[in-house]
Length: 633
Image (cartoon, rainbow, N blue to C red; front, side, top):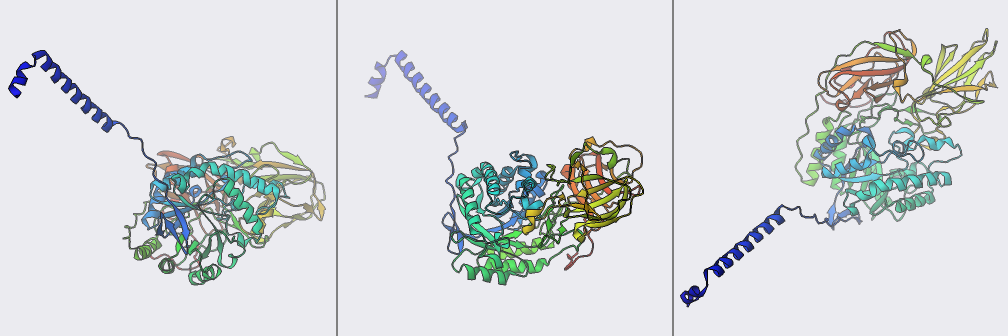
């Protein structure tokens, strides 16, 4: 009887019931709103699984074909990392590969640098955020046409230390480095939620030696550093697979365009049931000072890419984008230790993405080949960046090297760069000549370019490229001062020559067969140009010069160095690298992020400076003749 029930409830009790229900409803609404607005703690995603299965890879149990390209964080201005990664992905890549460069991260023993341009972890995270996996190649030897193959030069201060060996002094230094590197990259392994799917053990060791105990010891170091918690593999050229591999690790093969059929046949013969992967497919080549510029056939490379992908091979292009060996970090090639071929600052490599980050014709060809095999539609080729020309002033101020020498170091014999605790730049060696002294001056083991002066008069130059170590000095009519200005033009990064790659005067200096003693040495790393005193007075010989580039709006450009001779160039405090009139490249890539609106200070040091020194800008690189196919216009 609802009416009777209603009549026996007193009004106060009815109001209380209504109020209670309203309160409960309000609380429910507020609680729901709070749950909606409050950030929900993200549940950690289950880590992916990446493994070798038979001849291929599995990602989370499903077949996965790695299509990678090499990019080096140290060769790309940090502001452009994302741009280059996105372009690599647009070509159809799902992975990028990079070395870790020991000598940029530990420039002095125990002093580590993982900031700014050297922030390897930030580069790897950027790749992950762009949807790319990562293959890490920690070395410690990396080759890469990079100074001393990535080794810090201070290792060579002890001449008894043997690089790439079981030498205890060497392995102890490697152990410390790898443990420190592990702190940076271990959180970025796939098992920890990062993008690193695989790690390469050493680098083409078979081209250097066949000491498997060395590789096994290095593998143990990797494991202690936490770098082997996933797919670990070795990488070698086709003829070196047995020497540079370990039986329990996957082995991959490296080679250049035109060699695919032969190389994959050798890999399959070496490991019939093993992983099918190309660790480096050289889609271009690098340039050396005084030699021809290289261009390779992108059409042939696209055909071989299609051939290998159709056979189920995983591939890493070396390089997808080369970039620039800024500063002093270019390496040099040598197969015997007596031949010497220093590499240019430009590391364009004739890669699908050029030095300035623009797609060249082979980008679209390779992208089409990848799309044809994977079935994924090719992304439109990215638009090229428009480079600019900027007005450049004439030289405004200059300074003679002779007027800007530091306090010297004295020793009975010449000391190497390493013994002087110097990595790069120049060293000026000075000794006294008594009256009547003359004859053949021999600089045994001169590394790698020298100017010889008597009382500051240039007698001549010696160039390691040309096998030059001797020069004739006329008999001195009076007491005189001998000065030898030596440049480290890049330590060898290949072959057993790396073990004796001290820079400077590395051996005995004799005059007419008699050793010269009692030397003064002036360290000239040129790390702080603020210490150079400039003036409006003209300067000739080894001199610093200052000019200004007027920039309305920062854009990429190239500095045309054809009006200079041989030296080093800085803009806005950034060391762009070396220039040398012998070519084959006559420009220095100048990235927009390193420029500012208005006047930009340009400083260059020229060994043969004179009043005719001039700089201009151009919108494209300038090369000498090429050795093969030119890019279609």
